[in-house]
Amino acid sequence: MIRPLYDWTMTKALSPYALPFLAFIAFIESSVFPIPPDVLLIPMVLAARQRAWLFAGVATAASVLGGLFGYGIGFFLFETIGQPVLALYGYAEKFVVFQEWYHEQGAWIVFGAGLTPFPYKVVTIASGAVHLDLATFTGASILSRGLRFFVVAGLLWQFGPPIRTFVEKNMGWLTVVFFVLLLGGFLLLRYI
Image (cartoon, rainbow, N blue to C red; front, top):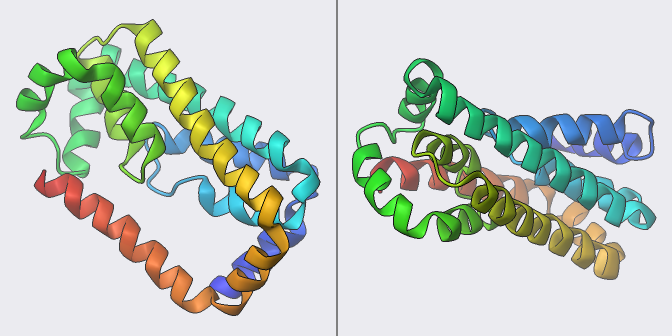
């Protein structure tokens, strides 16, 4: 099942719809969607290494804009939308404690979440809900999301062919590892 999706993504990497689709996934992942854009970014860069920097730039810009949308959800709609999304990810009960130290460490929290598999949408909504300074939030988002996507694109640009061979040879267990890490991130979030 994963192999056809991978093959489809590889063939679509040069299509006129590749960039808008990557932008859409990066945008919604930052506010409500659970699947990270790396799932598209990696095969797209492997299929079209010469466009690696463009792909990383689009993913970064769309992710930051999506993060601002998540911030807006938290800021303006926390009670009606933000609370249910945080509850969906199991973070509603812990939000009060989180809010207290968030004001002290907000920039580092945003930066760390932007780099890691931690669900970034939780941080974007929380940043708006606690009214973290918008410039601090935006700056930390640009730095962390840019670093994340440009490092991935850079590594794939530099070492693309061997990585592509490795991914294609080991697609089955890499898929399992990806989903275990994704599920582990949500479980970790639930029990933090």
